[in-house]
Image (tube, rainbow, N blue to C red; front, side):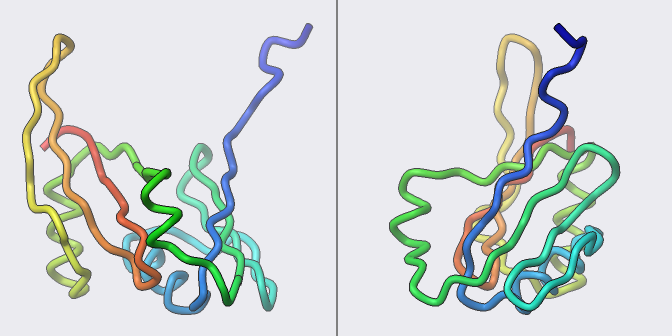
Length: 123
């Protein structure tokens, strides 16, 4: 068996407004790694890559009841600052949680298509 059979998780989010969702992630510092009419891939570094697929009848309210989109970060405050600069909708401001392994901070930002994106990490 190979050392690393599974090498990356690459989920695909379905969205109605593909272009707006791409702009949202680009404004947060992600890059476009694949560009097709109905599908775009978004990347940050070597470990984060996901797809955005156009789907006109997706119901994000139903999807988000069963799915949490969470991205680990080195600085939640830096993401919060970007949100302020880029006018991104923060639906939950800075919250601090204490666990056995230490403190973790989160914010929740709403994407243009209605996904709540949780950013979690150090302040």
